[in-house]
Length: 220
Image 1 (cartoon, rainbow, N blue to C red):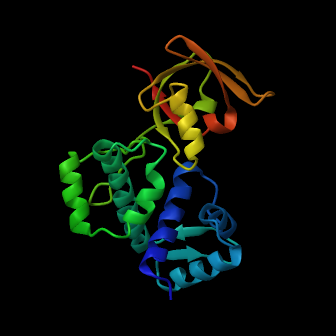
Image 2: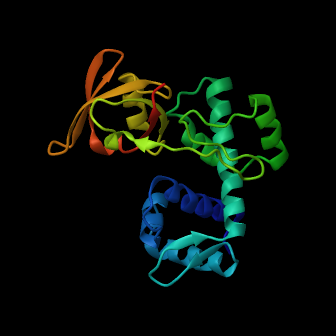
């Protein structure tokens, strides 16, 4: 029998995978995201499908049901509020909070989370720019473009950065790429797999894989 922690982790992983890619969420993609064997993931997916939390056709994509989506969004809300608390109140850096929140999200009650949200001022985004689901599961409507797709000469504001790689987060902060930073795309070099950027008059080169996990909005 899957534990409550396992259920929340799997449902959140399905939700997170769909946030960053339009590709179907498969058992192999989930196993890579969770760091588990495909056979183990397949068995849990089967159990969660039987419980009405996922849908999964053999060799097809894995999707959340309405019930599964409710649990996933509640878990995401806990995770991102805890990350915000760790940064705002305990002095953590944005590359240090993900693993802490992974543990704490399963240990706190719903009432604790709502009191935390109130104390934090009902934030809509966490330190990485990830939207925080409201208590009713709603999310802000956002139109964002990954930095690798921004046209040369355009100026954009960094709105969101994936928190999957702490080392990348540390590097981005070191070179001045933080939430709210205004970046101009100087040149995109597809053959070299890089993009040249200007930030506050400083030129730097970033690999396209890193640029794809930075979401932007038009600069004011």
